[in-house]
Length: 328
Image (cartoon, rainbow, N blue to C red):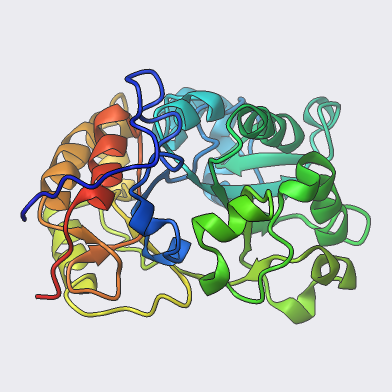
C-alpha cells in the first residue's frame, strides 16, 4: 500500500511521537469520526496485575482447587505486562474492561469494584485514576473505555454506583453531548474538552436513569471473537471479517488474540499466555501491513487489540492513519 506524507499541525518530537499521537494526526483526520480512525488497544487491559483471590468469573471446577494451582491459573490469565500508564505512553487508547462488585474482604478495602479475569485484579478506582492522570497531562488524547462484563452487581453495588464512580473520576472529560458516536470527531471532542468515550455493554432498560443523564454509548461495539487457540484459525477468521465493508455507526474492534482452551493449558501447564502471544502478535503485525484505517472500506480497521501489546504493535496500528486509503 502506498505511503503518503501528510502534513500535521505540529511536527512531533521523538518524545511525543506516540504519547500524543492523536494530537499529531494529519489535519484531514481531525473531522473524521472516531469510528474511522485506526486505534490500538488491549484485550483485558487491566490484567497486568491479578491477585491470588478467585474472581466471580473463574470456572466453578477451577474455583474448588484454585488455591492449589493458582500460579498456573495466573500464568494463563495475565494478559498484559504494562500498567495503564505504560500502555497509554506507548500509544494505546482503547481499554477492554471486566469489572465486579468486590465481595472479598481484603480486596473490598481498596474499593467497591475490582477488575476480574479468573482472578481478582486491581481496584477500578485506582486504575481509572491512573488513566485520568495521563489525560490531565495530555489534553488532546482521547481514550475509549469499554466496560463489557459485569459480575456480582446488585442493588447496593451495581450499575448506578459504578457509573457514579466513573463520573466522579473523569467528570467533564466524559463525552456527554454527542447524540451518537458518529459526531465524535477529534475536533468535536477537543472543542468540547472531552477526552473519554464511555462504552457500556449493557441494555439501556437495565440501567438507571442516572446513566442517561451523564451521556454514554450503550452496546455500540462490534467486537467479533474468534474463540480459538489456533493462530491459523484466528487469522482466517480476521480475514473474513475485514473482507467486507462494515458500518461506522459503531466502534469496530478487531480481536487479535487467541483463546487457549483446556487442552492447551493441560498440555502446557508451566507455559503462559505470554509465550503464546509472542507468536500471535508477530503474525498480527504482519497481517496489519496489508490493512488500512476505516472499516467501511475493504480491509479497513478501527480498533485493534491484542494480548501483551508492545510499542511495535501500537506503532503499526497508529501508522495506518498516515497511509493513503484505497477503496479497492
